[in-house]
Length: 156
Image (cartoon, rainbow, N blue to C red; front, side, top):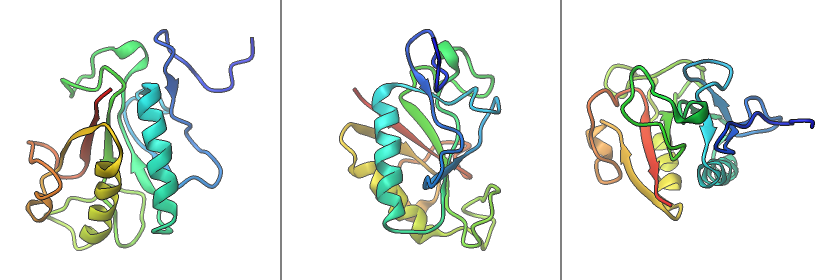
């Protein structure tokens, strides 16, 4: 049988890695989508937010770790096993495809990042969002090591 998009033993699909015309691009470990297997509810949320984002901004946002195939253990994560958690990088003013820390870079776009977080927060079923920018704590909760990405948890 022809498999168009990789799928794991849970039936979770890998997030499309380079979809034409998408409002996102990907990063993460392992590379080539190996850590981007998403529960169907997560996949729906990401694609919904991505479509909404395209109406607000021409820059792509960046999707990172979701889950390893089969929900295995991540070396640096206690979470990301269910396919219901995703890491997303803050937006950069210059649009470069490299990380940005909220507290150390003049390229951090706080306004655009807040808009993106608001899109995630508005999606039904979104639980906690972690990110350390104190100016956005009306939208997010702080958590150690969340200075160059925010973490979104989806409840089903």
